[in-house]
Image 1 (cartoon, rainbow, N blue to C red):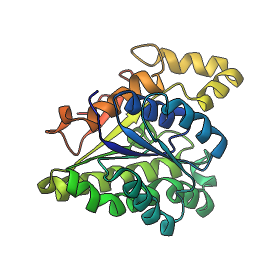
Image 2 (cartoon, rainbow, N blue to C red; image 1 turned 90 degrees about the vertical axis):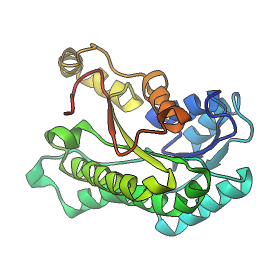
Image 3 (spheres, helix red, strand yellow; image 1 turned 180 degrees about the vertical axis):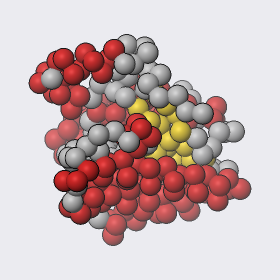
Image 4 (cartoon, helix red, strand yellow; image 1 turned 30 degrees about the vertical axis):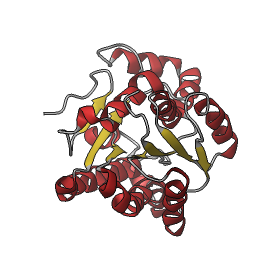
Amino acid sequence: MRLSGKVAIVTGGASGIGRGISLAMAKEGAHVAIVDINEGAGETTLAEVNQYTEGALLIKDISVKENIAGIVQSVVEKFGRLDILVNNAHASRNVPFMETTMEHLDLSFGTGFYPTFNFMQACYPELKKTEGKVINFASGAGLEGQHTQASYAAAKEAIRAISRVAANEWGPDNINVNLISPIAATPGVQTWKENNPEMYEAMINKIPLRRLGDPEGDIGRTAVFLASNDSDYITGQTFMVDGGSIKLR
């Protein structure tokens, strides 16, 4: 029980990678606050999480800055503390660079970068008290400049930038800030696989470990490590949980 007694906020925690992280942390004893706009999926994941931890919480809507302070306050009021912030939620549209509009940029930054930034600011006072952990999300889209992902890549690299700044500034407070760059078998990827089997096989063959990551077993367990005391001397780093697809220097 590496996270026994700790309290985590997981944005986008109802499905896919977020669900995997919520379950992995709950199984290690954390109290989990699932923040997600999908109430149906949220209720399902909440019931699953409650099998492993007491009093998990479901909170809707993360996109409005004015709501975020209230979300953090409600979590602290319920559990008495905050130890872990996982900024996983993000939405975007894939279009070629020359077709990317301000609407696409606003969607990606509005659901990914700005909530990450705002949650970090809102959670800082509580994380300072507990010497807590922040886990943000990067992407190979930004690291490699993948086709049709200009808005998503830009927001993800912006998240990496502020994570490094926070790691430097918050280090004296013993707050660790790290990132995960994953490849995972999410429901969206499964749908894409069914519609594009040849492209899916080509993608798998480019991954050295020849498989997609499991949202709970691979991505979630990495998040548990980064949330635990085992990672106390690691900060400002991007962890490539992608089967060896990208090798950072």
